[in-house]
Image (cartoon, rainbow, N blue to C red; front, side):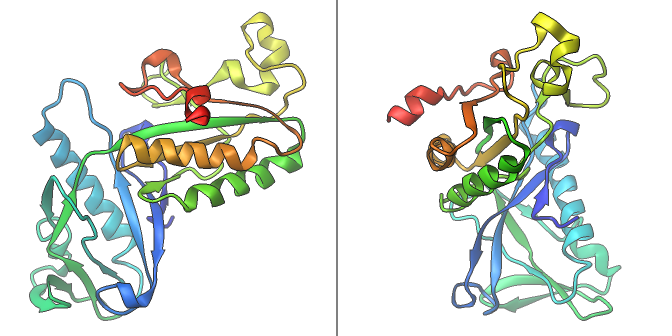
Length: 268
């Protein structure tokens, strides 16, 4: 799996996605590149230092197993206002097994890791910051063929918004907070599964005539960025045929401290 599409937050790992493509005249090494966001959630009861340490480990796994192993790759710090910096030497640079070295390249301090297709490069210090995860909306459809068409149009609109990612793309499996099997992480949001409507009876929350409820999830560097992306995605699809209703998962307010109300969002 490519590092640029890694939705693993519900199982306590990192999520990643492409924020935007960057032309070769705007990258340090003069090649076409991408800006990638990598995310991990805050955990109640844990110190920020412990959370950051876990994130650093998970971030290193993503880079080592998804980027370093690909030919001719390089990683640069693109954070414009970081809260702090991660030292990439400890868990990434030492993949060189002692043969790694530091050099000044591209006006940056780089770690050079010898590989069999020489060589992987990563900036020694990578910035991190705080943001907002889990912005979402659901578009409820009648027809199967409309699921991908509508989702593609929404994602295209979201791609135009600065500082956000949609790591799940079009998501078929919205989850819920409370589950019978907590060791799994997120389990299916059963009241909104169309195939369970008859079995659940009154417990089902699927509106009449709806057969598909895809979800789009958005992470962003600020609450405003997430709001802008949600609004752009919804505006792009709200008048499309076979989109009967647009809603969102709020999970009883247990998902996080931010609440984004769709009617207020679209009226702003």
